[in-house]
Image (cartoon, rainbow, N blue to C red; front, side, top):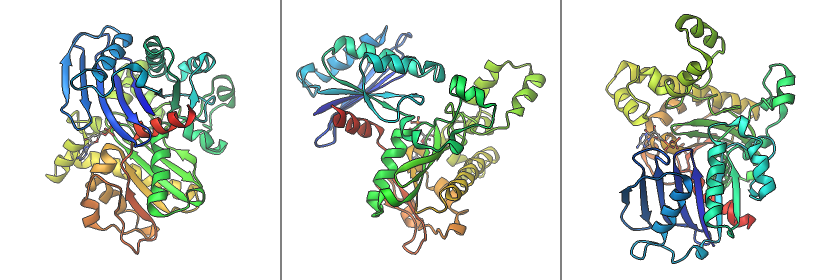
Length: 397
Ligand code: ADP
């Protein structure tokens, strides 16, 4: 089956066309600045050159039209007609407590997704816009929603509940939901297979560290805790997000700087993390690594704070699961930053972990970076959320 995998933001549309039998990505690309001046589409067929075109894209329907045009281009396209697309898999950000697994997107389901909009006001409406635009152009193709929150729905109450008045959970569903679930599921399951562990009888910690970052504890194939919360702001130090802070900081800064809640949240989401810790030098881990190597004070601070937070969560999750068999690093930073992995693992001697520096330098493939005598296996597993969405979609249709 040919599966069209879609990740729709408010002004962007990322896509891949994946053959679900061979699991090959036939083509991929991105529309940017939808509804904003200076629109752009990029398109890369498998094994071909990346093409970029500047074109105004007034709305998501037009974006889908341009993408289909690229996919069917007689010279560089990979299909001849829309009929060759068997199903569409949409990445959906927030499924609240309604969706613990992927679902076929029918009218009833779309209504239920819209009822979660309050929980993700930036992301869910954009995802839905994408679904409706896609439906307009491909009305007869089955569509599946794969939720970022679904994998974390197995968390026990003690892990997902915030110790604030319980009525807010009952009234509004205020609790920990977690994100990057598709990646945590893909990586933990794949790691078990790669390491020869029985997934249903294993304790795995997944560190998904990219621009956004989250960590999860997966016991016997089920998520039992994760660091992101009601929103993707909680937990680890990220590119521009603070992760955990004392909420008292908000009142303190509101008084000192005259900031309202919107300004405070903007600061925590957009001006904090690596960017904030380096006095606006960069939110990009590559820059931070360069600075760390040359001893730049701000980069050393940012790197150490980032790694320390990961170390603390690993300790907490090893305790939560009463042990750990494997720790996996994934996503842009987790897969590429040997320095981050080294700095984190330096603190894990108490778990009987030793790292092989040569293996830790390698990049690109699934790899074990711990020494053979290490009590806990540490590995790098490249994530592939698009493939995970394609698999889910093929399974459901
Ligand atoms: P997201 O999907 O959350 O936007 P990614 O998973 O793509 O983020 O990760 C982006 C991060 O990965 C950036 O901080 C970038 O610096 C980092 N990264 C990418 N390549 C490398 C590399 N070779 N070495 C170190 N960090 C890298």
